[in-house]
Length: 134
Image 1 (spheres, helix red, strand yellow):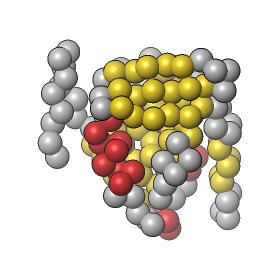
Image 2: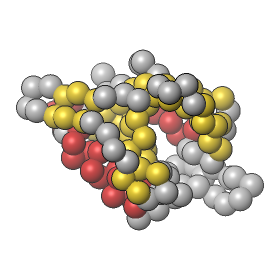
Image 3: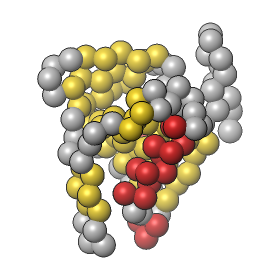
Image 4: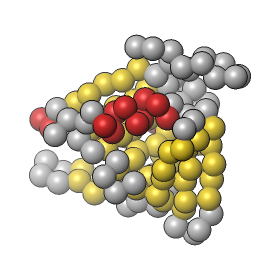
């Protein structure tokens, strides 16, 4: 995997692709939050969903088809959110939309607040959404 250079520090995000039979949303959300709390950059792809953690302690779940976003952790602190998972279905209460412009991750929350974040693994996220498993 290629390393992405950043003016402040290098980032290395490990990726994992899961097949539909391996999917467990709740387990993956817990995993990615744990990675964020340990400041470990990871990326997990579940069909159109992308979960990622950052070295700064943030964690997100994204729906690449709907451009929906949900912040799971910020600065290592687990956020309040709603995600449920059963053997036949799952649900996520999305609280924002996102888009990526180059190295910039832009989030618009339901409240209308816009957040611009630099330093997330945007290239890896874009690559994962283009090569997702179906």
